[in-house]
Length: 89
Image 1 (tube, rainbow, N blue to C red):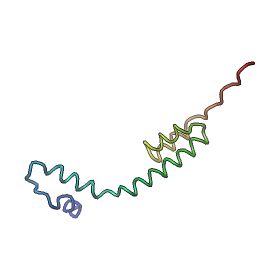
Image 2 (cartoon, rainbow, N blue to C red; image 1 turned 180 degrees about the vertical axis):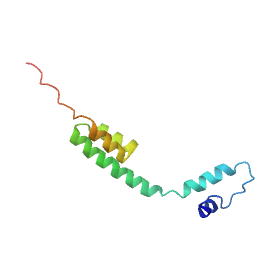
Image 3 (spheres, helix red, strand yellow; image 1 turned 60 degrees about the vertical axis):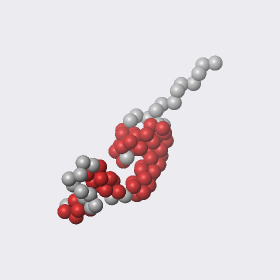
């Protein structure tokens, strides 16, 4: 924890008025954004596949995008979408 705190406050005067934002930006710079982006694409791809299987493609992608793997559970627990009845002639 001390190492994380030292990395977050590196180059920041803690008595300065804008110190919070500098610490916050230092913490954001430590986040692995590229890995998070690719994992999110994997989650959405699996959500698309599960949504296609359940007849809810867009809904599957949206749930996976918002909730990640938890969205997969949401789309699997929803009932299958029934095709509309044929139109009478």
